[in-house]
Image 1 (spheres, one colour):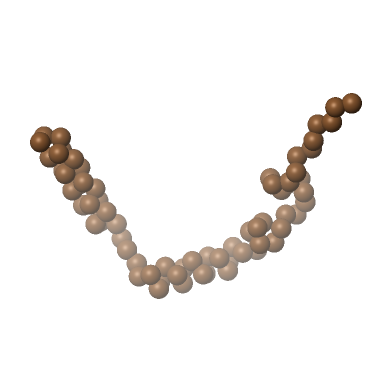
Image 2 (cartoon, one colour):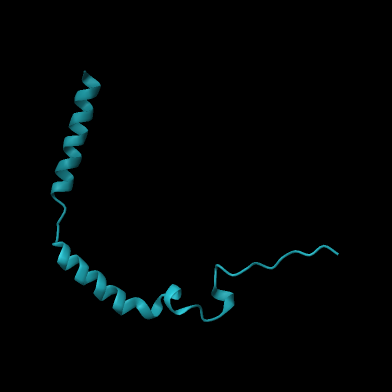
Length: 67
């Protein structure tokens, strides 16, 4: 019983903290995300590719050959 009461208090405290989080409308959040993507799209390696293969972390590693 005491453990259940403590768990309920913990949940209640968490819900109070979450209620204080500032919120914005979904339409505003979408506009902000679109703006961010448009502003930072030129820096995105997945969209534009890599400047050289040396900076590409997904490049094929050198294989070890046994003579």
